[in-house]
Image 1: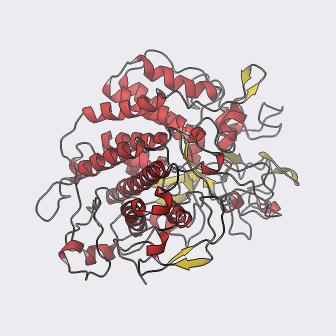
Image 2 (image 1 turned 90 degrees about the vertical axis):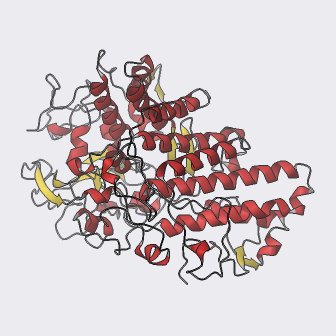
Image 3 (image 1 turned 180 degrees about the vertical axis):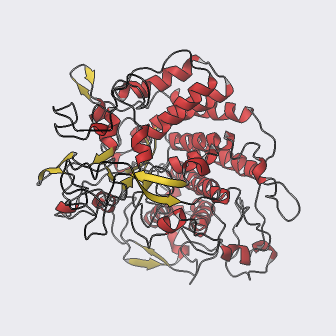
Amino acid sequence: MKFNTYTLYFTLVAMITLSGCRKDFLNQVPDDRLTLDLVFQNQQYSEEFLANVYSNIRDEAHRKDAVPFDGLSDDFDIPYPESPIYVINQGNWTAGSGYYEYWDHYYKGIRSATYFMENIGKNQAILQTNNGAALIKQYTAEARFLRAFFYFNLLRQYGPCVLLGDKLIPTDLSKDNEMMQLPRSSYDECVAYISAELDAAAADLPLYPKQQNIRDYGRATKAMCMAVKSRMLLYAASPQFNGNTDYATLKNLDGKQLISQQYNKEKWKLASDAAKAIIDLDVFSLYKVYNGAAIDPFQSCRDVMLEPWNTEVILARNNNSSSTYEKHGAPRSINGWPSNSITQSLVDEFEMANGLGKDESGSGYSETGFSSVDGKYTRAGTFNMYVNREPRFYVNVGYCGSIWPYVGEGEKVMEFYYTGTSGKLGARDIPKYGYISYKNVHPNSNVRLGQYVSRPYILYRYAEVLLNYVEALNEYTPGHADIAKYLNMIRERAGLPNVAPGLDQAGMRKKIHHERRIELAVENLRYFDIRRWKIARQVNSGLMYGMNMDGGTHLQDPNFFKRTVLSNRIYFNNFDLFPIPQSEIDRDKNIVQNPGW
């Protein structure tokens, strides 16, 4: 059966699948079926219901089929013509295409969370335990957080959505019933509602993961509530949603404006305060690995994604499997599918080791020839474009000639030229632009044997909070000392010098945008950044460059190492928001479509 927006995730027909044996809270294995009435008479079954609400948090590791956001940014792409990512980047997209329709998915999670909140207080089995009332309060807060989180995911993808509050709509209503004909709330109303829900949930949750039992890491915390609020308020303050006259026609049928047409500077204050509140908790810090007394920037920036629940992790999907992502980030020589490709545009964005951009005087950048000696992160014979770059370059970028130590396989040389072991000749699994994404690929995973290092998938981390703070502060109080202070913390961890002093607001904005792109590369954030800054059409349309995938027969063949147009993307302004699924427009006559669809 096809669920509509308001159908309960578990179908509420009377049956639910639950586990009959005790396992980790977030990894239940169903093998029994009970009526929902019985679920809320038993502590274990109620907890398993809540675990299934958590399961609506999407696994963002799979970039081909599950989550498209990196592939629809200017940082990343995949080579498969049958993928909706490929089709969308060619401009072939309509409201009826059905691509990545998460509207229904998140409303299922919302309804499941609301149903749990409405019923968990009836569970006498929990209430009769020593800490029963406290558990009910905590579980209710967890469901409230999840509901708010799902609403935010709707907001960031579709813009203004339909707020249901605590209302449970009966599942047997006809689609024409007035309770099913609900309009969209305004963007600012959605932000206010989600913020209030996150605040309410935070009041009854542990502060951060380390205050929980290890087996409960991944369950909601106060810090998670604060982090989601920080990201949301930053988006709300940004040009896309703060006085954007491009959305002047986005109104409900009664004329209600859904995105405010007046710029409000105070939204930046709300965003900066929300981020600073997390900093002031003093429980998170940038993850660092030391080599003696000095920070090792490569290991620090690499292992922050690999070390489970380190000092920087705020929200992670605990039961994530890394296998698909890592297989798409490994060479064909070890049975990988090397298709997670980053673009030349992102490659060019990384600084040199001395902290200068590639086009700045004195940077030392060269786009011709090959190195004659080993470098700190490179070997003799490396194309000079890749020599003496900042450490995060080598964390992120697998280039032709780079070395990766795969466990059980020894060191593997990446061969992306035409006849190379991961080249285009006779293959479909290729790095489209001549670069593979290394970030979050574990060196101890063995792709050939299908043995992957299981770990949480990070969705929110402390570095983003710092970048949220400095961006909002620069827009509200340019010149504030905290801007350079916290931006330089990130650069220090990355092994780079401080930003130049004396930058004006525009200069600092450029630096902050740059630092977000590099520090948070390939973490599904760039897609939303270029839209909220209103630069998506500028940076994500037209000719996209990489190395010449149709050239080269050896590692130092200049026919491969030259900038080549590898795609021509088409981007229209209406792509800034996903279309609401046509099935929802047809069902709910009060839902208006996003502009241009």
